[in-house]
Length: 247
Image 1 (tube, rainbow, N blue to C red):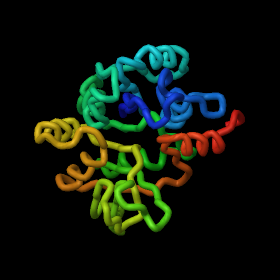
Image 2 (tube, rainbow, N blue to C red):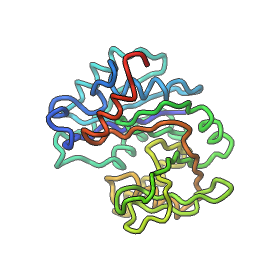
Image 3 (cartoon, rainbow, N blue to C red):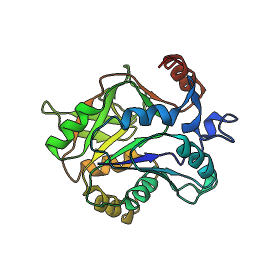
């Protein structure tokens, strides 16, 4: 299995902290966010390649980080060529770029967001994905009432199949929301290419997942621990409180 890390954002909501430091390299209890995330991801068996997709502005910072990160799994940094928030490609385009750069285009891929933190084992989800051989999305429960227009919405059937997916609906009906931990089969590359060719939204991955749901069955699994999506100062401080230097 391959891993694509999405880390090409400019994190303008966290200025001035992220003006000269990419969000995934912000310190959380003595370690960069990305170090803590990949320590969890690389505990999975069978991983043989990791690519971190970033932008030109922060490419050197990620390369310096990668030079000091110890892992037996080949890891490299790939720039998407952008240098400002205004000319960014978008997360879906970066995901496609990262997948196209992988050595084996038929291999399954785990896509993760470089600004997320987890405290649970990914092994059981990887095992289920291997058994089902279909896209598996990890989901979390959002406290109710779910605010409109803020979270992706996932409806799940009793057998774990996704019955519905909507990106940030104005009338949420479910409190389950996808997190950026996506297990994809190798066929996802051709579907990404089709999605892009139809001129769909290339920014938020949720729009791609909503489209993907209409093309083939997907599974969902509820996360068994804590998930932190670092998007602003409040969520950054929450993550720093949760992860200490002793972790």
